[in-house]
Image (tube, rainbow, N blue to C red; front, side, top):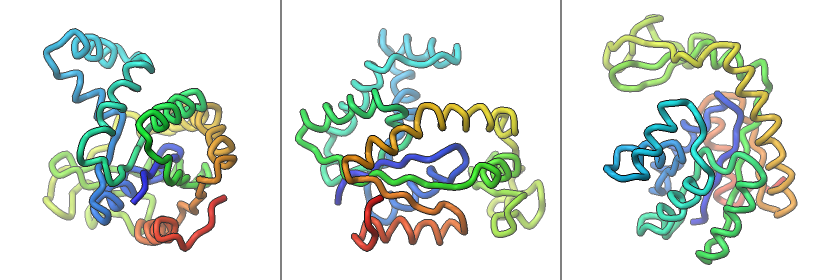
Length: 222
């Protein structure tokens, strides 16, 4: 199995699809956000620095993210491949990641992009609800993802909450950042012949099957 890198705008379902691939192929799911949170609890100078930066809402320096990522992908469970989520976010980071892979003698693998129209993403964001107990995700604006009761989790009867940043203003800002910073990555990876653009509309299972077609060699790169 090769490494898998997911790129997607906010609310495209990247986390959900990453989790499904993780279970199906038994690959570790690496999120740079998780790497930073894990490092922040360490009793060290680095942990203290990361805690301070995260609490202030500022961005952690790229060199620290590179070091954390490099250390993680050299661990034993990554030797058969891994799923990378949330990195790289721009071409500069992609170039550094290439250098890292070259140094470690690892392949880039698959770069999978979930493509969904902005208006559909906006509906997903404003309708998203998350169970405060078990973390199950629902969407009030999508018929197939609605809970049986608007404010109650089907699984554990926990209360469904809306995240603070799941509003239209926050979405528009995040989408604009994605278009300006992350979208140029598509051309970067297209030139390398590893880019696969997937239609992200439809049910979770429909999108999952499209991704599986890529991983099984049944789809052509973009």
